Image (cartoon, rainbow, N blue to C red; front, side, top):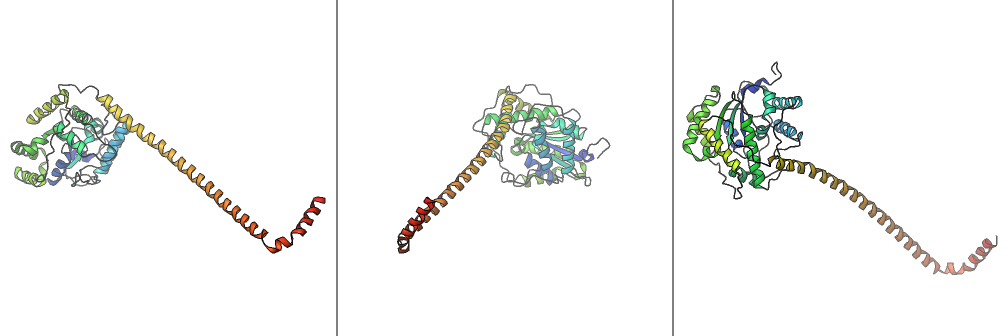
Length: 354
């Protein structure tokens, strides 16, 4: 740690900032191919990302906790907020877990949640950021979000997915500062436009630390190997892109062409806070309802088991009574029972007379 309490290795970090399903996993693996060091505690790979996500479990958990503390989630991000001291400490601890200080190898840091939590991470790490800013056309992001649902969060609405695309990209751009060193990337153009790809790879070589020993040829070769099997997802058939989102996408493309981040002109689509508030409330309410249902189900199970025990005990007692009745009936039919009957009657009268 430095004297100011901030992790000293943060100065070596290249942040990869972009919305979920915008190509960040593919690009972070490409940066690893070029020599950047990923986290010590990576999120395991999955079928839709067989090469891994390049994300730290500690940082993901910290970011989820930061969002949950404000009744939010990755798919219900809260509006901008000022971080508190415990938020900053949580982020610093997560960063040190993900990137223990080892040598001078440059780091690559990636988690899409960073887009909506930049104020916290800037306070935790301090100073200007060195960041690659990645974006895709909203329809392609929406299509990928709807096609690759996993875990507890299931996006079933293109409206919701579009809203997330807008919130993440706006928050990302608004969180950057003039002293940040930024390289923008239009991921669709990177895959589809050979001229753009060649220019961007040249910019990347100049952007990354010189110690990696990269040149345009080596970067191009690594890119071809990494993306040889990359598939381009088409536009969502349920596109509901708003006018505000169209303007934002055009602004992103214009910034990528000049690699200059400019203030956004348009405002966010109305109703986003209400939408994300509804999603967050549902995430809070549904688990509570499920908990109550689980408690009721357990009580019903216990009552059913008790009833079954009583019914079983009663049935066993009834069987014993029937067995005794049968035994008594057989006894009454025996010769000895009939012979001793007069004696039993005399004994009964004597008891009654006494």
